[in-house]
Length: 337
Image (cartoon, one colour):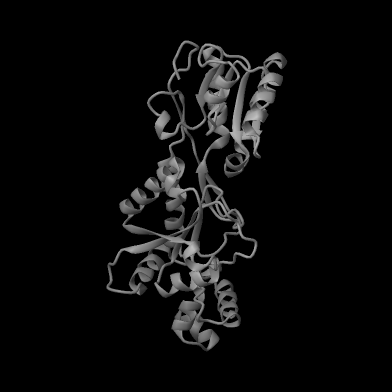
């Protein structure tokens, strides 16, 4: 920093702030410093950067650093009412405790969905790490300047940001579920999923199912049903008649009730298992355990990794960390679901 400061005729503190993308430094000065640093072969020392960042935090040295969890999940009880979100948050919080961080939620609704105002609040509080988490809404005019923060994303929430992300391994999970049903003896196995959640999987569910079906004998192929709109039960009935599956892998929908209304009984007429087992299904149904706490923990790890490397803003080459699920239970035709 001293060499850079002497070369550019500025203070060492200016160099330090420019290298950290401190908003108090003008874009022109920051560009001069970064260009000179690159020419001189400057490389940050991650351990020293982390130590100095800790010293610069507001309050006494040794305070627990806060990582912001930004959410935008309105209506229907918010994300706290969703099994998937609660399990992922459990992993986020537990991992933060292990690593010596505190996680604090920042709902966008508290800031009138003004990302610029939220960013200013985080900077004023000395918060450097940001995890973009649970969301359902994606306002077109949402703006959040990530350049001052170590950032990462959970699942595909806030998908407008091209971030390092952690997600469940949807491709692996859906293929695992279909293959387990196949090995149990079923032949025409149908996948029934919502369009919204398929999108959250990064379309891995539908992609995995279509590829798996492609490798089955032609008489055994069953197109996945991806539901959306107000008439989902009617869509299900039409699909069932057309595809004639002998087993179903389902996410979220009350298919047991839908089958009953069609005069079909589980398990006598149709085998039923779950792509993700909700809390209520954990003790009575076979299916995939998505290891969702590990997904949350992996997302938190990505933020901490960026903090330790003093890496801020959108990465040039974002990466995805995918956590594989495991199969629980043994579906058979005479097993009560």
